[in-house]
Image 1 (cartoon, rainbow, N blue to C red):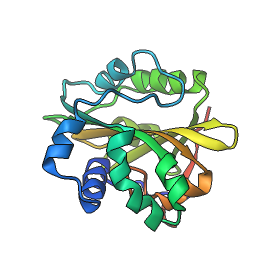
Image 2 (cartoon, rainbow, N blue to C red):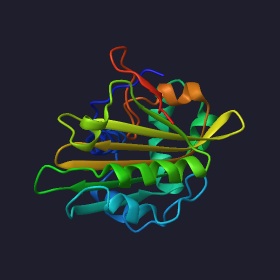
Image 3 (cartoon, rainbow, N blue to C red):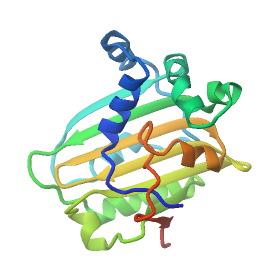
Length: 205
């Protein structure tokens, strides 16, 4: 799977929603929506995310439920899905943004614990092919981790984590997607865009 690692997930999500006609009133209401379920639940996920870096963060989070996401159906159809599948493809999206005052150090032990939590819950982990322990702990650019959860041959959960020197973004999707659908959604809703120069590969175990 070839996916870009340089996408800023917060801006991609916001731009996608604006492009399909999200009003400020709808966006404000989205923050109060109940969180959807993304594959098997991970215990203490928010706490794990909050403690990945070596300093406190300014945190903002938003959740878009299935009713709200109906407005985004046109984006899915434009990417090649038929109307029926597009209406069922996305059940919920949540976005969490963490901003740091100083360049962050992402504690390797905390990241390893998060990875193990996803692994124990049956998620598949993909990373940038060029990631190293050094640039994941202290990124100079943007480092991307992606987790997929499958129900049979279809994907029912996606998590995309991007980390930079002063930011960390987490996008979670509850969905019913075929692998090809995920490629078509590249560049929308926080899913990295297809790019032949950047490769996501299975993470080493």
